[in-house]
Image (cartoon, rainbow, N blue to C red; front, side):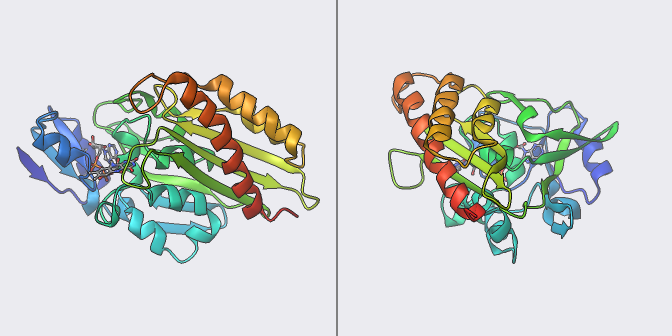
Length: 284
Ligand SMILES: Cc1cc2nc3c(=O)[nH]c(=O)nc-3n(C[C@H](O)[C@H](O)[C@H](O)COP(=O)(O)OP(=O)(O)OC[C@H]3O[C@@H](n4cnc5c(N)ncnc54)[C@H](O)[C@@H]3O)c2cc1C
């Protein structure tokens, strides 16, 4: 196995275009999979030498977060937790303090698990990934990147450089909740991210609801968002949201939860997540 640490996007893409190459960000999934021989890459391409993958920048249009920025670094940023608390909380549910010092948003998404915690929060925030590859750079909404377990929309040589997160709306709020059988260090049985915006009178003008662990890929549930728009997020709207969420779920049946259980929990979790996002939006 060869280890490479390029310092430019172009050099990384060229290395990744070669046979048997794999991106390394924090390594909290990759190294575990290499040790257990699930993966045996010939070349490991550490993207942390590329500045754009390691920084967070902010301007009037929002944030650009490097794909290899760690969960701990997201939390330490001076304004990100105020603007997008749900996203920061989701990233900081990943593993333990030690894992949070290494794990990244890019790795969480590209590991290709439907239960990845930060992905529904990214989707709810309408995050767009900037992808670099041998043919240049392109952008893709996060909900279009994971297609099935371990299957991504990235082609050979491509990797995620960063994520664009829009500026938080004036009366905007987001939240992420997951259901796990233990209190921490567990994989989501259901995860839910919600981001919404209100007008000055408290009517919902935009809402985005995303679910993890209830289908082969993280879901953007358009009907759940539509159920809130134009309402004061009252009981009737929340009942419609719950129904839309449950209708979208196509979970597996396993020892962590039956199909019926996951569908039931998803509706309740989406309602609770929405109420936290609403509170954060200021309930004007
Ligand atoms: C003890 C423990 C507990 C955990 N708990 C949780 C949890 O609660 N919730 C959860 O969601 N996950 C959990 N995980 C999984 C893991 O920590 C996360 O998925 C993490 O976000 C992966 O990020 P990373 O930077 O370490 O990725 P890496 O291990 O470096 O990479 C993961 C995969 O993504 C690819 N990759 C990485 N970055 C990119 C990129 N920018 N572009 C393209 N491909 C890329 C790699 O090639 C690899 O296949 C846990 C892991 C451990 C060891």
